[in-house]
Image (cartoon, rainbow, N blue to C red; front, side, top):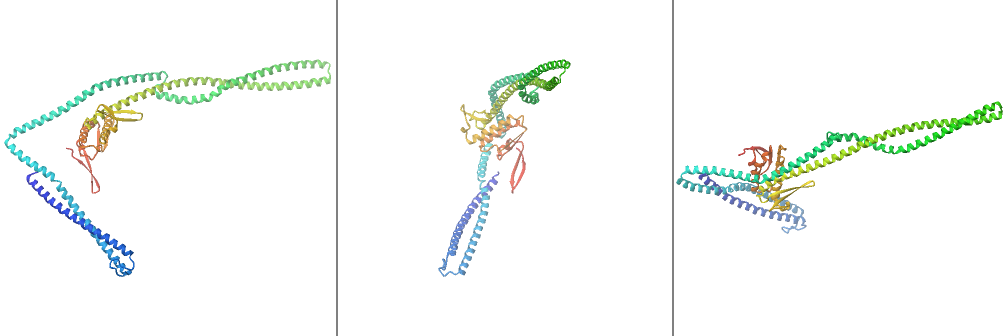
Length: 501
């Protein structure tokens, strides 16, 4: 700003100061008038209330109060009240205009600091101009450029030195941890290979094939369970068969005895024919008929027993086949149980392997979060602890070599810790996520922490292909490649891209 521009600004500020005093006096006068009008309104309302209650005598003049006079007085008071209200509204509009003018004046007065700074700058310029006239400007310019170059080189070297020191501190721990994890992974791979070989020995190419075979054998196992009661009935059926066979043998013996008796009767009949007697013939005939009927009955019973025997033999054969089938199912079931036990062992190993990966992931996230939180807290805290308890993650901080829970942190430090942990998760997943969106990441952060956050974003978040940050903080645009501003103009949102310096 030139000296003429400074004088012009000084004149504008003086005019604005005088105008402000004038506006404030006018506003004070308006407030006084408003107070008088409000008192008048209160008094008039009081008078109207008294007039409405009055009977026979006017509360104002003491004269006789007629209904006509009362209506006229109420009409006059109402008109006066309306006049007061209009004046109050006019005073409100006048004050509103004065307030608008006061805002404009205040905008000019706010430039007073700028004026002071410009005056001081002009003063310094004059002093410097006087000093420069006595000095060799070309030599100073050359030295200044050399100093600037050396300062930049020094800053760069210090930054690289700091990074190297940090990397040296972490390198030994990382190498040790990598060796341990490699051994652990190799051991788990060997165990996994053993289980895969065991599956192959059982005739399964994969766990999926084992699961499929189990599903196929499930109906057979259910049928086996249904047949178990039938196997228990085999001895009972065998006893029944033996009993019926014994009865059949008994009937056969009885049949032979009857056959012998018939033969004797036949012989007696032949001998009787020689000395035939009708009475003897009838008696023998009746005996023969009875014996014949008994024989027919025994033959029918024998046939029934033969049929029953055939059915029992058929049933015994079926039960024998079912028993053989049950034996086969039992063997398959035992094989499946063994395979299931091995699969359970394999699942347990896989679960342990997942837990190891989970612990490693949390450790990596904790390392990232510790680095970021140390910077955000100006190295007040020396790290973050991350522990997995059941289905949740518990965070802590390390202060003076001791672990503290989050209640030890202030509100701003908790916000910084939460931000550090979210950024650490994003960094851990940097190779897997194509996009990260952060909505207002800097609430309650002071200016210093916001500046540090910008530096952290520039150094860390470049690993993620695309990062979108929504924020009101102007500092964050310094870490951006593109800035899109959304502002409200006359009730309508306007979107525009801002040039990044």
